[in-house]
Each structure stands twice: as structure tokens, then as C-alpha cells.
Image 1 (cartoon, helix red, strand yellow):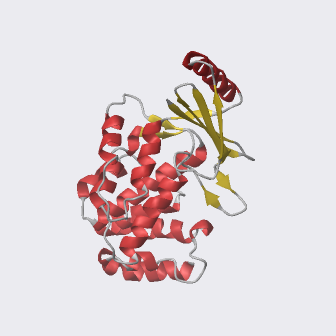
Image 2: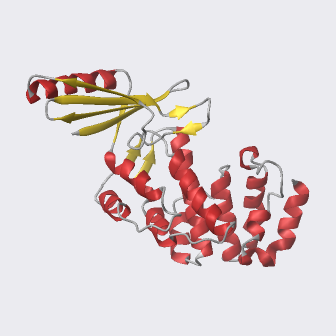
Image 3: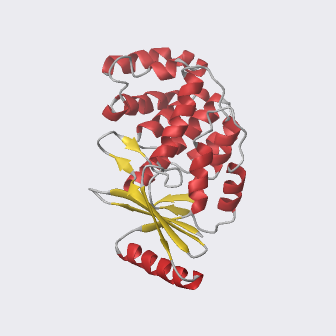
Length: 270
């Protein structure tokens, strides 16, 4: 038995993992985000930097009883249990931009398909977003290979995930934006239509705006391009250290070439 719990508020970001090995109770705990070093350990299954403790009991029954007491206390303290299916989802997504065969993702997607209600993500998915961003950076900037089919499969399941807090909900919206970029790059109109049916047409989320701009350029919705490009330009958090024009990422894609005049006007308004 192994169960994962997380806690986050304005000042804290912690994980707590408990497991049993016959008559031994093992606990791993620590900070999920190192603010001093800016390093995120969102996935407790992979975290090796926490503190690990163990305690032996006379019997397995006594051990199980103490485990339940420890879990009850953590829940009372405000910790939320994290489903392992989501942890497995992270484990797979983080390797999408590597040359590795997908192994966990199909099982995770099948698990999501079984659910009548969305999986409530109660911890945040910053690492998922970063992994997908890395995949796109590798593809767009370095012209490397990305498992686009795997990202598309995941994008179709995005409605099966629900953000439990504002940040997580915003991260999910960002993933929709990445899905739109995959659809545009792959000229996959079916995926594009699916995602756009699940996202708002008005947004302040720069990653979704980028995806919508890709979609508009790929499928010739000229009147939408400037609107979405300007959302990206006006987002201070999306600046590339101020070292290059904000529209460069769009110019890299061939389907933006008919709209270079629009991008030039956007640069002037920057």
C-alpha cells in the first residue's frame, strides 16, 4: 500500500507519502517546491530530496491501524490525497519529448475514459505544463522529433481533468493551448475543432492565445490572428527575457507566412 498526499496554501507547498511493508510503516515528506532555488518537485513519487522515516510494529494489523490514524491526521490538517493515476500521467508526459516508447500513457488515458466525472486535480500541474512546453521548444526551436500522437491523445482527454484551484485550472487551459499548437502543426482539423469547443474564445491566458493564433493562421481565420497574438505580446510573464520580438515563435511556422504583415503590426504595438 502506498498513498500520496499534498498540501498547498499561500506559504506552503508540501508532500507526504505513506506506505507499508508488512509490519513497517514508511513515511516520506518534504517541500514540493524549493522557493530558494526555484525548483519544483511536484511529483512526490520521484522526489528523493524529502525526509524518510520508518517504524516497525509487532503485527501487520497494528501497523495498518497506525497508518489509518496518521492519514486521518493529515487530512484533518488540510492535506489532500493525490490519485496515483495522475502521478503516472506525469511520469509519462514528462518524457514526451524524448525518444522513448510510451508505456504508462495508454493505461492512464484508458483510466480517464472510465470516469463519469472529471479527475479533480488538487495539486497543480506545473511540471506537466513545463514538460509539454519543453516538447514544443524542442520541436519548434530545434526542429526535433516529438511524439505528437501521444500529445494529441492526451489533449482529447483534457476535459476529463478538472482543476481544484485557480492556478491548476489555468494550467489546464495552457495545455489546451499546447494541444491547439499540435493540431495546427499537424494540420489536424478534427483535434482543433475538439479543443476549440472546450475553450473560451476570449482569454488572458497567453499559452491558449498562442494556440488560438496558430489555429486561426492554419485555418485562415485572419480576423482572429491579431487579437490572440496581442494577448501573448501583452503578457509580461511570457517574455523571453526581452531579447527577441514576441512574434518570432509565430514566424517560425509556414502557415503564418500569409500574415507576416499582421505580425509586423503587432510588433509595432509591442
